[in-house]
Amino acid sequence: MKSVAKIILSLLLISVFAAPVLRAQREKLPPDDLVFVEKTWPEAKKTSTGIRYIVLQQGSGEVGKPGDRASVLYIGRLLNGTEFDRNLDREHPFSFRVARGMVIEGWEQILQQMKPGEKRLVIIPGELAYGTRGSPPKIPRNATLVFEMEVLDFKKG
Image 1 (cartoon, rainbow, N blue to C red):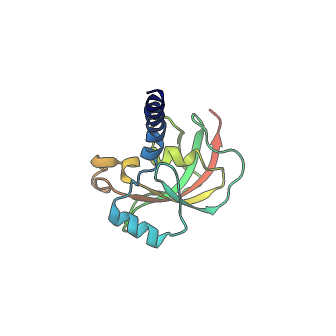
Image 2 (image 1 turned 120 degrees about the horizontal axis):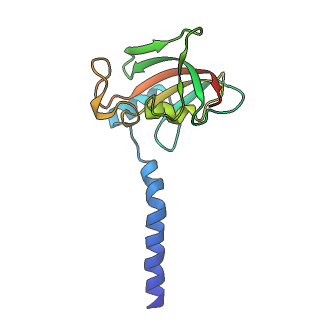
Image 3 (image 1 turned 30 degrees about the vertical axis):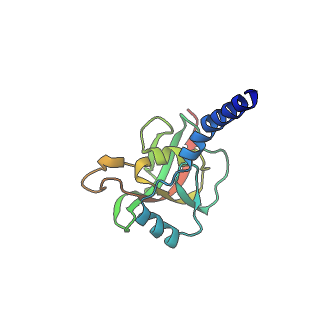
């Protein structure tokens, strides 16, 4: 009896601790988008939450932290290449506080991995972007988004 109880307890503990890991690694790109992304950017790395990225230029210094003011240049495109937004003005970059709900979740996550001066191509699944609502009229529901991003700097809280 004691060995059966140990096995049940072990399985229960494994399921409790493994479930979040398995959930975090679930593929978030729709099948057609996944095929396109893997064919177009086979060298892209994948985060545990499903964001894919390619470092185009290394940065230096500290990564962004919650509360830091980020200054970013970017071009945003749909997976088919249609541009929906951009800001490449170094004099007036897009600026916001990291991890304060001011940008899409995919940006919140990836910026906490980037350093000042770093440029990345970032592919964000729809559920970490605008989700089922999209952002009409430019961004459809569940759209996978592709950004070219450059972090100019992070200013502490």
